[in-house]
Amino acid sequence: MKRRIVNFLLAVYAVYVKEMKLWLRYPTWILTFIALPYMVTGLFSGVGYVIGGANAVQNFMENTGTSNFFLFSLVGSSLFMISTIIMEDVGNSIRAEQLRGTFELHYLTPTSTALIWTAHILPHSTISLITIAGTLIPVLALTEGLNPLSIAETFLILIIALVPLFGISLIIAALTVRFKEPWAVVQVIRALVSVASGFFYPIYILPEWLQILSLALPTAHAVELIRAILVYMREFILSDYRFSLLVVLSLAYLIVGLKVFGRWEDHARKTGNLSKY
Image 1: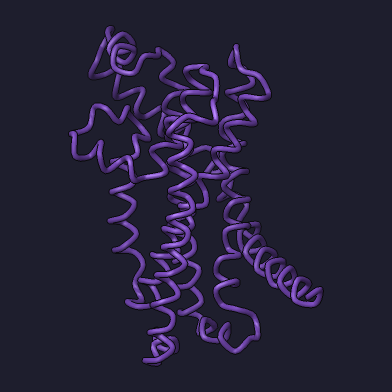
Image 2 (image 1 turned 60 degrees about the horizontal axis):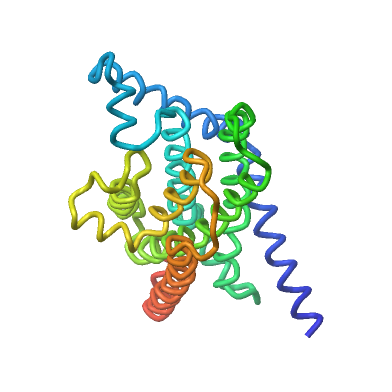
C-alpha cells in the first residue's frame, strides 16, 4: 500500500515538473496572461464611453448595480482567461504529444494514463492561480472595504471552479484523441461558455433560454459568487444555492470528463488510433 502511494505521488510530481518546465520556459506568457484582463477591461471601457457618452457610468450602474466598472470587468476577464487556459491546454498537450510522436509512449509505462492526464490539473491550476493573483491582488489592495477573509473566500471559489473546467478539458482531450484536431471543438465550447457565463455582463440581460443554460455552467456561478464578494461587498454564505450548484456541477463535470475520456481512450486502444496522428 505504501509503495502504491509513493508511486502515485512520484507520477503526479513527474507530470507537474514536466508541465511547469514547459510553462517556465516561456515566462513572458504568464506576464501576458496577467496583463490581458487589464487590456480587455480598458478596451470595453473605451467602447462604453464612446457609445454611452457622458451617461456611460450611469447606464452601467443601472444595469449592474455598481459603478465600479473596472473591477466588475476585471473579475470577468480574469475568469475568462483562466477558463480558456484550462479548457485548451490539456487537449493541446495531448495534441503536442501526438505531433511529437511521444503520445503512445505513455501507454508503455506502468502508470495509469488516467492518472497522467488528470495530473495535468495541478500545473495548470498553479498557472491559473498565479495569473488571477497577479491580476486581481494589485487592484484589491487599493479597494476599500475588503478584508483578507473575502480574498480567501474568492480563492476557495476559484479553486472549486477549476475542477469542472478540467472535466471539460478532458472531454476536449477525448475528442482530440478521436479526431486529432482540438481547435474546432475548443472554439465552439469556448464560445458557448463565454456567452452564457456572463464574464463581461450580467446574465439576466441574456435571452431566457441562455439564462436557463447558464444554470448548468459552473463558470456562471463562479463569476456571480466572486463578483458578489469583491464588487458588491456581500457576505459569502455556504448555504448560497449558487455555491451548492457550483460544488455539484464541479463533481459532475469531472466525473463526466473522466468517463468520456476513458471511453474514447478504450476505443482508440482497440482500433489502433493511439498511434495515428
